[in-house]
Amino acid sequence: MSIWRIPWQDNSLSILVFLFLLAWLIQKTLKTGRREKYLPGGPPTVPILGNLHIFPTEDPHLKFTEWAQQYGDIYSLKIGSGTVIVISGMEAASELMDRRSATTADRPKLHMVKRVTDNLNMGLCHCSDTWRALRKAAHTILTPAAAENHLPIQRAEAIQVLYDFIQNPDDFFNHIGRYSNSVIMSILFGKRCPHYQTREFTAFLESQQLWNLCMSPTAVPPVDLLPFLDYIPESWAWWKRLALETRQKQRALYFGLLDECEQRMKRGEENGAYMEKVLAEKRELGFDREMIGYLGGVLLEGGTDTTSSFLRYLVMALIVFPDVQRKAQAEIDGVIGRDRMPTLSDIKDLPYIQALIKEVHRFYPVSPIIPRATLADEEYRGFVLPKGTTILVNIYGIYHDPQHFNNPEVLDPGRYLSHEFGVKEGVDASFFRDDIVFGFGRRACPGIYIARDSLNLNTMNLIWAFDFAPFKDAMGNEIRVGFDNHEKKGFFPVLLPFKCSIRPRSQDVVNIVEREFKEATETFVKFEKDLAQADREWVNEVRGRL
Figure 1 (tube, rainbow, N blue to C red):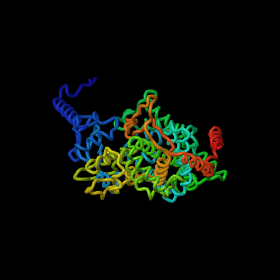
Figure 2: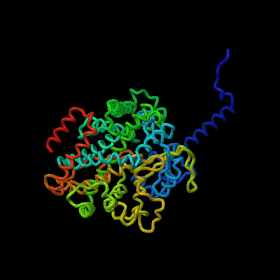
Figure 3: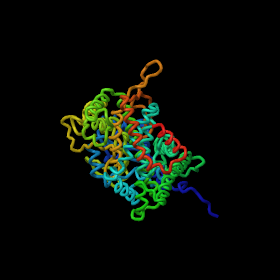
Figure 4: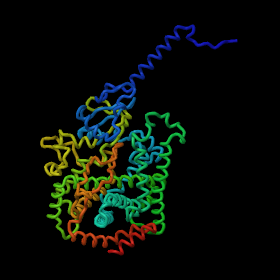
């Protein structure tokens, strides 16, 4: 009868092999987290963790900008065995993200994106045939000509913003959110949100709150770094339950709107919505229903959040920098006067307003960090960026580089009157452009033309119509507001509600807005065929008062 024995009990060679393997394992473990020599420099690392222990969990764009002053406009961070490249300079961003977009247009691994959307979120999924088909459809249909076709509903909704501000200025924060959601929902699905308590807008806010939590690197476990976490049962893994709830709410909204769009088409009640065209051409596009629903949903997300965030930052800028507000009003009054509202054609004659829009983008970009990933090895400045490397483009850091911008912490539209890109005299601006907030290369925002029209219209309208000032409490003390009044977790800070004083600049403004709002009814009704009964009653009540 044979007896099983441990080999090294009588075999010194086995002992040596074991010790060698143990030493190799220890050495390999200790090397984990160490910065490879071919990478750009960066903060000192520690074994195993790399820079994970110092990775910023609040306002990361601020810490990345601080590190850029110490380590340069391109540096690396080690997150365990993974690598993150942070770009805080326009020259590096232009070269790597625009000119080399073929190999830097991927997205980092995001476990929650796959779990929630089956990798059908065009903005966050990996480069694939599906992503290319979604992107092509978005860019083919969201053209400058298409944006011009949707100007009537944009202008009508912008007029309602003014009317809402006059009627209930305390809810301005919600009015802005309603506007941006209603415009893009009308353009995409052919249905508007007449007030901020509609079922669709409420559902959108709920799903976005959950989605933002899913996307926060500090709110959910790092499943991408620790894949074994994916095997934890759902009853213990709260993030899996979060993903399921988010998925259910997103699908209920996206596919509910798609259903209504299809039913209108069957009734012959088309109103020129974007999804009508996608549905009509789905065979040519190679789309199934899942792709169509998520394409509309992703565009709804992007169109709502970016526009509303910018306009809220604009209001805050006018409060915090009253001299800027006065200069903008003076230009509006000189060009447009007080007898009519601005129109989109006026923007070309308003250089200070154009500069103000650029400066708000620079001062606090809506998306201060843009994540990307490499599809292949890239060499730059003698460094190697390996395939699969995460790239974080620090838009905030680019726009707050004191080597390129005078007093970057001051909101000064005048810098864009002195130079097209707002940079200091003598700076080589050949690699600059003023629309990097809309992204780079193959991942650039497909709705840029619609977004620009919305920002131009509303910026002119708000400055023409209102005086913005700090809110005062019962004792007459001003309540301070600041650009740090936002949710600090994650890469995409969300501005929190704040109070301010909003007053019409004259009774003539009130009269003109009420008249224009009444005349906009003809445009609104085209997008109100599927309103809920409560929303229809609200609309009838408001219009009955005009």
